Length: 173
Image (cartoon, rainbow, N blue to C red; front, side, top):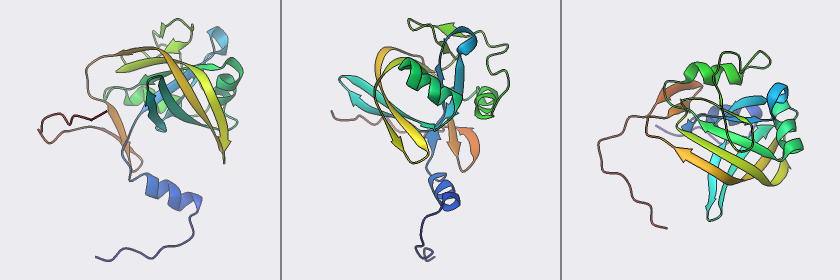
């Protein structure tokens, strides 16, 4: 089958095309107490191992984006495959996102989503505006990880990861 012809990229085509790239799902939080806020993201990547730096891309003008810029700090909670409802809760605008969640709080005093696979407390290393997003590079101060299956996002749908039964792929550093 032949591939379709190239055409100029637009927002709808970009969303559909990048939806073909399976990603993990995380929640970024910032602020403390009544000012705590958070949002579901799939734009998260490890940039550097030493020092530990990760990248998150957040929607310009969102409350969480503004709070990260103001405080210079944020947390990342990588969700497990059993946390789809929480991912959906933090993906919608408005609402009492933290209501009923027994959040954990680290050194920065910012909420972390309970039962997540990873919690990372980050200080903004640098930030850049790129189109309609703010890209934050976070220097990871505190990190913890537990075993489990991650929640994934593909083509507008949530799911989980099923391996092919192979041995773990060693990365050469």
